Length: 196
Image (cartoon, rainbow, N blue to C red; front, side):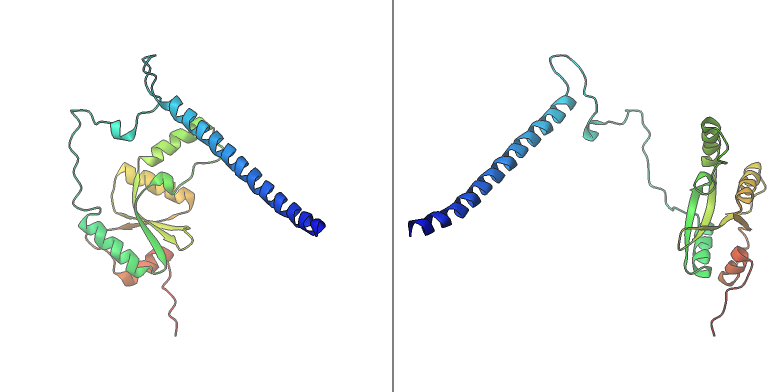
């Protein structure tokens, strides 16, 4: 009988030891984690005795300069003509995504043969120019850029960049915005297939 009791006591003792050992490891990890946490945050606090400043200022402490102008929300994101063209593009191109006011840099990539410095200069120049609308398919492949007509040097530059990249560039007269039935033909050069 004593042998049976001692045989059942051994597994119980092992289970108790394993639980105790696990809890001890968890407690040790918790203490070590708290120490690392306090070291990280004490390192980022300013040292009052040394008169040093904090490495980073909390967001709540950032203040606008006293002479900063007061900002106001714009009445509209898009003008009335842009809004109309946006809705015509959406209605005429179901299954497509329409983006407004994207930088040329988001649509056109620089030639890979350029050095890093030259590439950065060109990217900055591209980022200065904005496209009225960019049409993408559902996979976000760029299909076309749509802009209101303008006879300026900037418009010519954008057209040349888009043509070089192989992106269809569509110019729309602000006084004669096409109907939704015409949009697919303008973007793809074909009429949409009619399912019978």
